Image 1: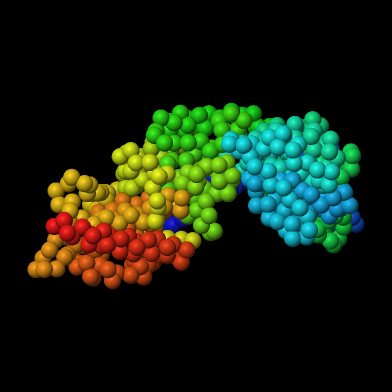
Image 2 (image 1 turned 90 degrees about the vertical axis):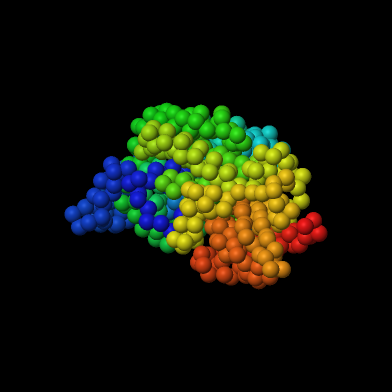
Amino acid sequence: MVPFTRKFDEMNTYYFDYASTTPVDSLVVDKMKECLSVDGAFGNSGSRSHVFGWKAEELVEEARVNVANLINCDPREIIWTSGATESDNLAIKGAAYFYSDKGKHIITSKIEHKAVLDVCRQLESESYEVTYLEPNNDGIITPESVEAALREDTVLVSLMHINNEIGVINDIEAIGKIVKQNGSIFHVDAAQSAGKIPIDIENLEVDLMSFSAHKIYGPKGIGALYIRRKPRVRLQPLFHGGGQERGIRAGTLPTHQIVGMGEAFKLAKEKMSEDFKNLSKYRDILWNGLKDMEEVYINGAIDNTFPGIFNMSFNFVEGESLIMALKNIAVSSGSACTSASLEPSYVLRALGRKDELAHSSIRFSFGRFTKEQEVKETVELVKDSVNKLREISPLWEMYQDGVDLDKIEWA
Amino acid sequence: MAYSQKVVDKFEQTLKNPKEASVGRWKPGDKDFHRVGTGIVGAPACGDVMKLQIKCENIDGTNKIVDAKFKTYGCGSAIASSGELIDMLKGKTLEEAQNISNQEIVDILELPAIKIHCSVLAEEAIHRAIDDFKSRRNND
């Protein structure tokens, strides 16, 4: 959210909010353009009676193969959706409803995306019982905590692969084995991880996995859900209609969106190791440049973390004011002031961070089009802005005076 | 949510030239500290803390605010609201200052509805600072 009105000079604004969304790669745009106009593949992939439909279907299936290849699964295990939010809804509600005979207990965590948490809240109102696991101090959901929460009537476990706010990576391989032993369905939200770190379904006991295109240089409005075939996982559909996607998700397939997602996933596979190397470099430049400042904290961890997402707190400086001071840098904050609810980030709170550190947090997320020079300049800009804001901060003044802020009774 | 240009300008001026924007403090031991009233409102856990100090002089039997300083931890509009309040205070009698309402700050800065609490905080800060000053008057 842009916290203030300003005519942004986009050319001079550095974009460090790739975890929120990414620009569409121009190679992807080119492919998408071929599926819209009268001289392109505009047909309905459901039209079986003419060449326009056949062409669209061919492109849709090609894209499905591209998505499947990225995670090493069978293309028939991929279902198109409108995005990761729909995939999460379909996975969680679909499995919870279909397998409700097994039980009505669901396990998730306190730091999931709202697309998972809100679905779970909805199911609670439909007499399901949900256990919300606490992450450890680094933000990781440990396999042990999953094991301890599993019950005979646990129908589903839903956990994210990479956390969108702090970038920590959950060990879904180890968790999958434990969930499988219990005979429960395992859903993983991979919106932040697909195309960024390797995922090989063959080595994972994952039954359902959500994907988004726009987090990995594809278009917004398209996503996919992996649904395991062997052993077959079944879902109760949420959309009913023309029977597309084998009846699991009705609706005319948006060829251009699907082709865009396919191309983005194909590119991601090719560029993953190069992208990862660059992101690690940028994260290191940022952290090495800032770590010697007083009272800076990493939210999450350096190890076991996707380097494209780096969340820091600058104590005694409020996050929204820091974003305002960094006016030519696009980042996000866990501060209450940047949210409509005026609540600080629930993810940072769940890590056991004090509220003031959540208010002081900034998420930097880098991507394919980030330049090293931008990050280097940002180090200096952040230092300068934090110092200026501390100069006007009464909390910094008290800290400098040696006052213990925890012992003050605040009005 | 979007801020008005006025909030942005006030915020940026404050950051660029804090001294001119009356950022600062008087501390115990400073000359005339007994004529300074201090008000601290808000809480770190809530995301904003405002510290306001007023320096008063007895002019013809009435206490007038001759100078004021602040420090604020908070969002852009909290910082802008503090700065705006400072501008209003200087030269006012305590009674006049007591009557400043948060609505005046809302109007000047065109604060969005979700940020009205920042102006309320500023109003509370002035009340606290006045109370603090009055409690010190015996030290004159």
